[in-house]
Picture 1 (cartoon, rainbow, N blue to C red):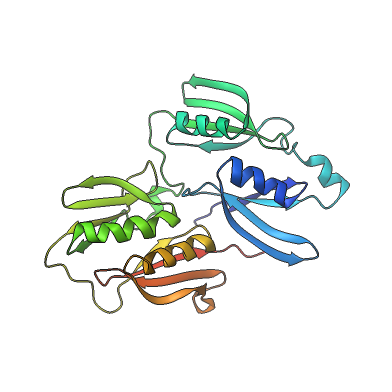
Picture 2: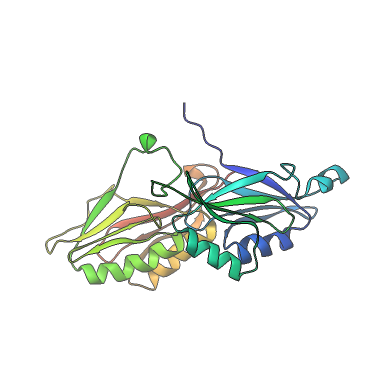
Length: 268
């Protein structure tokens, strides 16, 4: 049996003021913002390029819910936000006006500080000690560790992949003379391109599907591909034949590989 927590709810007073904090100050990505009628919206946010659970921002709809805003755990730390570079993120959040209520400290388990959201919910910002931050999925459950593609011209291909992977939150994690690896920041490579002068794309039926965290990320992937020499093989949109909430786009890269970006949207 495989289970995971896909998202959890934070009760807010107003969608837009909450988004201003979580997106503009924390730097989170707006994963979804869908009107549901009657002034209600399905609003999800999460760390850029991260894995794990997203946060559903739910507007309080009763006096009882209003009373819980900012007090969802009675003043205890509510969310543990892991980072691969504590000082980078601490300085960035401080410069954007995020309020830290406990200063940085070095503990046996890592470097940590506590900050509050706009309502008073408390978060740990933590860089764990002794291990690199990786995707939240259990590595024992991952079928594929990484994938390599042969390309004729590395510099030419890198221009394409640098551009199309950026909206998906993936970056170069290593660069060698004849190869480049891409993955989540602070992680190992998940996709590598390697210069092979005689390389040819795989035949009919082969394609690479890259994980996106939002429709906007899929849209950005598609737009970047077309502006960097890619060929459209299917514009961004829902593919109900593939399943509910399956939003994807397809392109061919400069070497002819069929590449997809897809987000599996949670259903209200």
